[in-house]
Image (tube, rainbow, N blue to C red):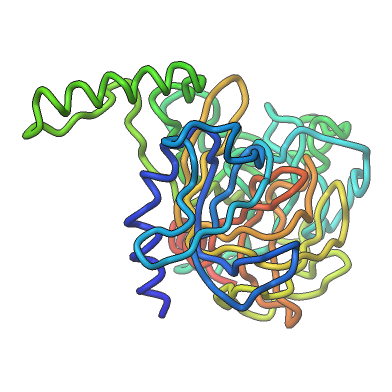
Length: 341
């Protein structure tokens, strides 16, 4: 079944993400009046849920795609969750457990997600997001480099290079933004009109917007090498040890332990999702094969490990809004960084 719904998501995602109000889509369970219907289909995430008459016909999400029903869910503007909020779990701790404040020397603060091990050497490493440990670098922008200091607590919480270096950036997966920030709805409408005319004049040609070259990211992830094994401990604060990994499932209860909101719980609402995320400064990046859950995080919780009730890792939290939480599939994270639990 998984391969079948993945095909549906891949088939329709570009069309849906081209709509001006859509920020993501994935496979989920249709809800009516907030209640589950038992019917699965394409979940479409929008900034704001609007009545049909407030949208032009071409801007509306179809009720059915092929034979698959759609369900529109308002999630607001998805953003990275690194900007700090009220201070919780923000003191210096040694050994530091996952669930506390951490950050690259040039960022504010995020969450120490988990202790993982190098797949080859077995060395203990610190796992979090690239935008937490690596200052959101693409590897060529000079924002961060291997060997940069990582502080616990993060700089916003008082961490400083003189006293609070817990490790150094070891590996990161580059975050590739879209070529340009997403245009406003007026510009998008003009682009669609121009493309329609061009298709009528040149039907044999494929029309592309050269200003936007969507290159999907799978993960926002990085690892740091601790200054010594004794400065970290594997047991997640208020959760305990990680008991392996598992695939997310629709309706699965999940939890996380984060810098800002501590231990919170949610429910998986969409799988295989492709989402556009504001990275700050007008920069937008697209992420595919993501897990979407109900709201369970606030700024500063980025990097938290998301687990099921049996403490099996499901995802790495990196973005969200007041209405949704977005996580990288943990399998993609482990593979990309060559690490394991």
